Image 1 (cartoon, rainbow, N blue to C red):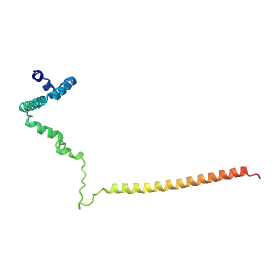
Image 2 (image 1 turned 120 degrees about the horizontal axis):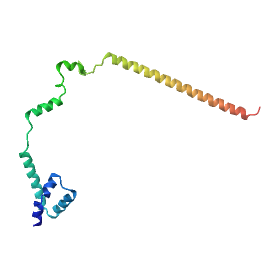
Image 3 (image 1 turned 90 degrees about the vertical axis):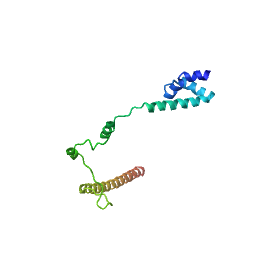
Image 4 (image 1 turned 180 degrees about the vertical axis):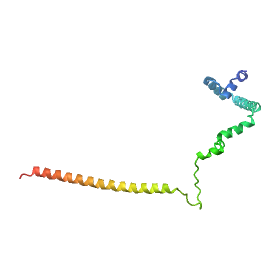
Amino acid sequence: MELNHYIQSGIIESYVLGIATTSEMDELQQMRRLYPSLNAEVMAVERRMEKTALAEAVLPSPHLKQRIFQHINWRDKIPPDDKSRYTFINIHSKDEQHITVHKWWRLFFIITFILSKICLFFAIYFFLKYQQSRERKTELQSSHTEQVRSPK
């Protein structure tokens, strides 16, 4: 009798809907371990609620699909005369082997490459000059310390 009363209390429905409290969920889990027939009742309630939801479902209006696709497809929103604001880059080449680039980008790349090599040259040059000056400084310091130490 206790199991029938428990089933009729509505706790299974609240568990399936996800509105049961944690204590109710723990209690139901404990009851499912004690009474395996309760598992079948939980499955039956799930199926019953699913059938009810599908039977009473409200279908969206046919125009809703068109409205959603209008919001998704941004090209349809642009008036025909307003497409000039957008720049499309065609990356398909004539021979399908190479991508063409505008000649100004080539010139920019060549100038950047040459400038980077010049900067690299000057960095190495000044680094070597700095090393030489450090060596001269250490030689002068060592010769100065030797002159101070050696009596005349």
